[in-house]
Length: 120
Length: 106
Image 1: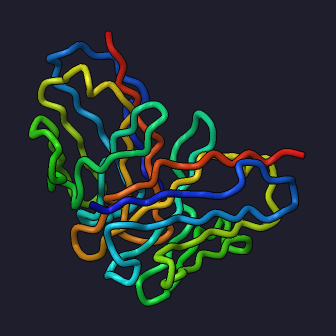
Image 2 (image 1 turned 135 degrees about the vertical axis):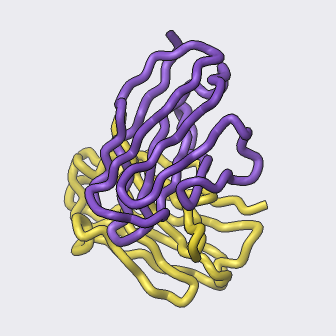
């Protein structure tokens, strides 16, 4: 059974860097998948942030591209998100997720989400 | 690619047939998924490839469409189906979601 679990600070100061980690269990992070970050501001819809493939290819949302880094730690079977220069607009529930490949690709497995608030 | 869901809010009764529409600003073939989200929970995959039912999802959920117009249908609404539903296109980057449809009890 595939499980994902986000962790990281729940409070980040403006202009600092938000750092989150997603621990993956039940599947190797080197398996043929994409590993994604998605966020949801309070009371709003879903926004795709970016993802990394099993081969290390990264793709980011252009709206955040200059501030986002997604990386993989194969030894610990986890992947991470860094978002720099945060503002109040980055306050959201952050989800890590697995996106499958191929014709039937979809985000089939989600973490429970972790709330991040940007405030001084 | 922008996804426009309609309606954004829907009031229905148990047993009703419910249809939600998702329109894409350009063709996305069948690279569309539907998710259900309940308050305080992560989204749950219902449908992928526009019409394929995810394992474990009740058969009262169905999806159809291709190109730019897609629908999610719940054939007989159950109490546990009251939630917000999102479509997502996976045809091209950046991946995008529709604005959501909140289904509430009439």
